[in-house]
View 1 (spheres, rainbow, N blue to C red):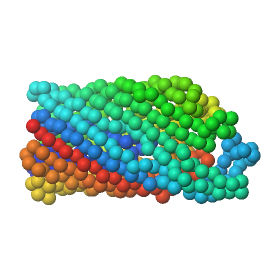
View 2: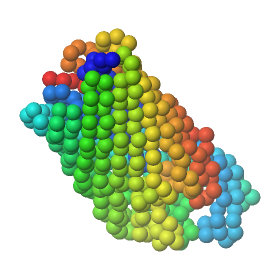
View 3: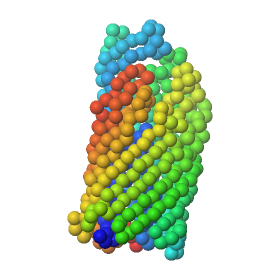
View 4: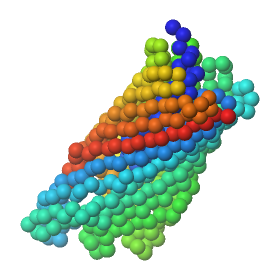
Length: 390
């Protein structure tokens, strides 16, 4: 069966692009906000530019609190019952890329995205107990990143590419935990950082067989180190080293019938080596990091795309992230996710393609150091992408 029309169609490029965009809108693991897909861009023909925007709105809340003796005014465990209210704010994510050929074998691409982020804000949800009330109100976390990648790709042979490039990443963050400080004789904890640039690299390999719309690609993104100047407790100047994690991803697609494409990906991120450990916070909490993760995260995506007519195609995919288990940070309390993603792509003309979609699913249950159980979380999101060939 000849499936060349699938591989050459901008519609299916739009469908797979939307799948990547919806993965961003589906609230990826830990503090991740965008899943890179360099491979797709380097297969665009000629000169190509695109812009994308995604919005994610997770809903997660926690029940009850048990203060350990260290945090209890009476030096004995204290229990409070109630609900935190929604702990996450909605967030926007923007991306863009440009690709062009140098000659018959060499091409390059420039990409912009926002790979990591946090938007945590606890509202007024008091919990009551024999000793009075406890409130998470004022517990916040904000982390922002901007990421630029320059990529060179080389055609080893007609059906095979290798590619690699340099990455520049800017990071800044702030957080507040009102109930940490008093137990150490200090006011409620706050931390603010400067804006720091760090640098890394990426490498990849890709193979395609156009006659059956087959494409397989493997890519690796290095860790990036940041040396942050931090101000803790409002007045204590310290330095905090943060390394955003390395990752690897296998992407694939293949035609399975006329006008039908199956696509998916498997991704690993080295979150077990990630930690945010401001010195004064660590000292005030007897060695506990502000943020860390017990294990690496794996993400699986599988979908099918169908071209309904010459200028319109749609896709349905599922994203699954298994739970890593164990206690997670109060500043990002969710563990794993399962989402359903629906996307569509439309060719406005030979040069302009529009694609977009929506996603909805569940985010995994977890608990924090205060035995607050965070459960029954959900997330919805939407994404829009505009691509132009010239």
